[in-house]
Length: 333
Image 1: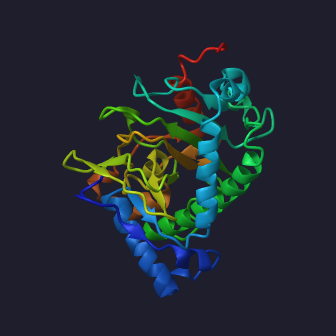
Image 2: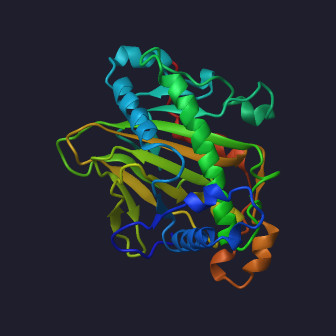
Image 3: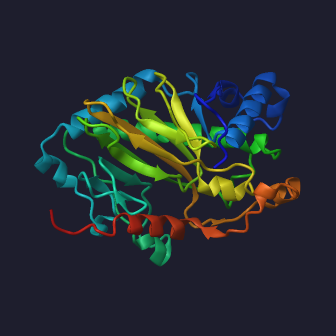
């Protein structure tokens, strides 16, 4: 945990990164340099930040995604179960309330889980666990098309944020690409948190994210996401309309040699109203061997925080997490 903030998350305008995203001279631009400086500070001190309006995904699309998600979760239970998640379909689809566990404790939410689709056999025995097609409901009818568009835009946005983070660490914009993130995997969780009539019901228990970057699109009128600071206090991530909340995950901590650290967070929906959140997880290549990059081991040799010796095959790590989370999942309703 790297957080040493008290009351709010940093707000970063990354528009200059989008304008200059393919230029080798990005850091010559004063707007890019300022965005990179703020990214570095946020990733060192907090691990979370707001991606301000101007990130390339329209507020209307973000809002429509949430509206349609609300429509899905309002469907009768029997209708939602038509796309039920099971091991046989690659752990893709709808999970009812109580199926998801965090750190061994039951979470109070329902969700649709999606993963990047890939050809059968592409990732051998490891990938076989997640083979399958994402399941989308019949209603709302336009949901799949909308989400396909949204996923593509989130992928592009995440790539550009990661290029800024690579610059912030003192590398080129492309340190995380190629064999590491040249063919990025992604995970998306479309989550619904029922309204409650009592306080401190844990919608999702305290955890760090296990990938590279997470983009969070949450309801604008309900505050439920909380981030832990260094003092052990939980700070609310108040929604800002049109903005994403972005946080770094465990794989980025490893790649950066511990210079950037993933941060504990949780969800407590104290509202009596239903809340939705669409979390997009941008990951390494599925078969990437994740370990500290040489450039960052050389650049930060004296930092005691950066004694990261862990070596992880991302796909194996993901499959283990999925199977642990859903170890109680059964094939019947």
